[in-house]
Length: 326
Image (cartoon, rainbow, N blue to C red; front, side, top):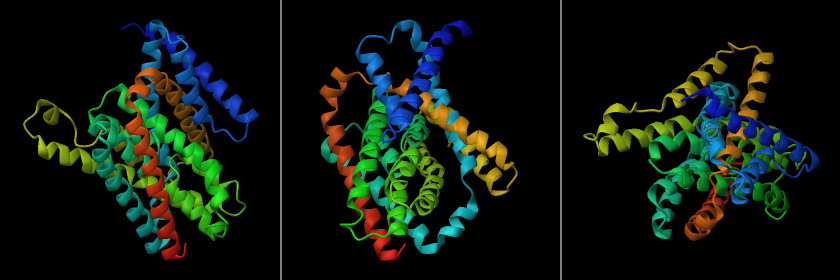
């Protein structure tokens, strides 16, 4: 395939990424990732996603997002786990485990296809679109499953930016506890920061808890992959696939590098900016896979699952924060 075939779609993705950042700058309540998904869906549903753009947008959707996942690892380190302490780590692990397992069980009850249920469970329990991207090769779903999961996790994460600060006082949370609750329950890192930033003094706790939660991404993907290989050891796909997607291994390598302080603060800052930009670009590209007529025909049960999962993780995280005194 000629490189030229990718250029129009990549250029369109770059333009949409710039537009998403511009809209978010003009409307502080909006997050660039949320705007990007909406722009992608808009482009498709008004008929602007022409065939000559699709090679480039597919490249962005798959590979940009995977590079963003790897770079995300540089924002994490093992000392962050130690800083959180045993009780804090227990809250994170229990919240992630109950949300993932509960969402999978609810998915069966709602009749959501298994691959889509798995992607939704991963996105809601760990870190939104990045987690969906990490689990996608293991889930064996189609493009609609991936784009639907990302649309739903983006929707609920955006709602959290508005809803959770309003619940802080009725739930009796001080700033630090609110930050821990946000870090344990909001999906995407950008959405976590945007939510916690609305309450002075909450941001540090939110980021520490959230990044600790993200570290569980690799073990979760690896665990699901190994279980699936064990259940179908004789299939050709099981034989040729590595037990963990290579970019997830890259994510773990990046965590190890960050833990060793092997990268300068200036380089880490650049990597963080690049990671954020690639994530926004990838989410625009994935948004172009959201075809509303199809989503409306098949997405009612998925939406019900997503909203239930959102309530589940918020409730479990709140109980954990109050019991652990975080």
